[in-house]
Length: 124
Image (tube, rainbow, N blue to C red; front, side, top):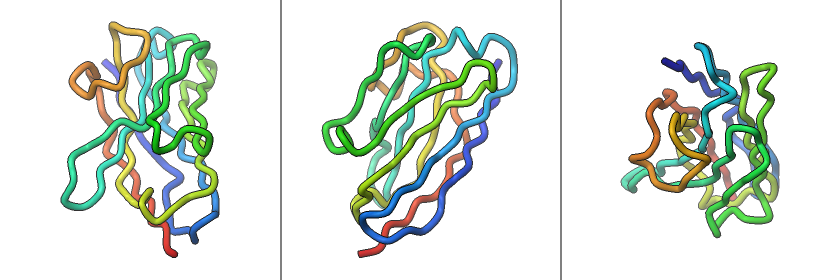
């Protein structure tokens, strides 16, 4: 089993940057693909980015491509989401998730473990 704890959220003006972290506890972190999702008020949770277990393959939603970067450190059991050029529409609760059986996917149902989320607010 994997426990996930997100951090790094906050309030920032449009055009600014934030780096989210997701610390994992439990064994076999390096064997899990990891993903970031977000959920804005009144909307469904949506895919943001994913990374394969080794970090060699990454996937992004079109809405964040070129602005966000997902990475991982398997020694520190941590996955990151660097968010640059933030827009008000990026405002949401951000969640990290672990996929124990794949190489990374945008499909929410494929993820086995979820963190509690961290809030990001981008003001114009």
